[in-house]
Image (cartoon, rainbow, N blue to C red):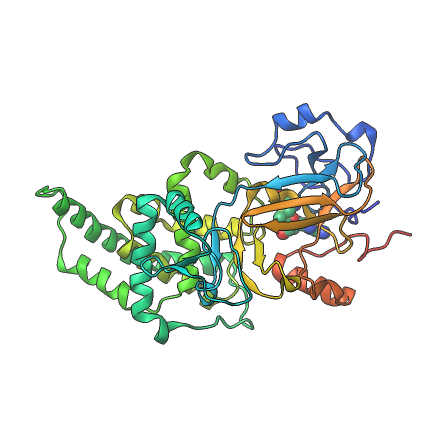
Length: 388
Ligand SMILES: C[S@@+](CC[C@H](N)C(=O)[O-])C[C@H]1O[C@@H](n2cnc3c(N)ncnc32)[C@H](O)[C@@H]1O
């Protein structure tokens, strides 16, 4: 049985709190569980979601499951980032890749390439006219500036704590308010409205100043992808909010500042209908949910050695990690499939691994460090903490 060493039980919330030991008395019916499931959580007769003492919610087998059984299929991609360096080689829609060959169907206006016209069409449909306008605005800005601004974030910096995060977001609030007024003025003039909003030089200057700041293209893609998704799926935001929270999601102070600068850039350039969603709150919430819930998008051939970017599939984010997982995950296009890697008994926790191929071979100590650094938890799976 795989288990994580028990400590203080988590506080009760919408899902019942139980021990990780399989126990028939603690396994309530799937129907009861489903009543109190978080928005977007997966449901099946094969498993149920329960609280664990020290690893949040987790997925448990509701009956014996044979090896190779398809446990779950997630096609609920919300936001995704395709790193800029892979934009010519990896399909913007299905993430198809042909060993580094540039794809034939390129749309330079939005800055994506596609493996077929069909994928390009789907991408357009999903993004809609507002999304296309948003990506075009971003691409125009990035193209002007990418050479001078592409930079790597310093991995050795300390992670900013909550106080610093609040301060840095607050430090851009006044400029953001000025830019918003400048953009409202734009709206008024496009509607031929004489205007309740008085746009002054100060407002216009704030907007121009934001555009001169350094840009971070991948942070921008992350934010635009989340904002466009939220715009098109207002009723599904709950599914993102329901995910495990990282209240300190920025890797470094540079990373945090890249987000606040991006906030100002986006206020200055995105199409007007998106602006109500371009708030510090929304951008922070996207990072805080993405941080511990994203799946890496890697090459499917060659053991996933190429890291193209990452994405968030909310229903797939309820599987906890084990260094000896009993569930195998596999991506096909934009869909993740989860299958039993061996026969599983009713009551066992269903775990995937969060480690990449190379990381799985590391010593216990190094795996622990990697998980702590990337995911913020101390791994106490069966392989790390063998039971006597
Ligand atoms: C993708 S979420 C998994 C579902 C999550 N437990 C929840 O309640 O939503 C990843 C987070 O779950 C927790 N987690 C996953 N595997 C764990 C493990 N082996 N030990 C401790 N915590 C774990 C960590 O907080 C991690 O950041």
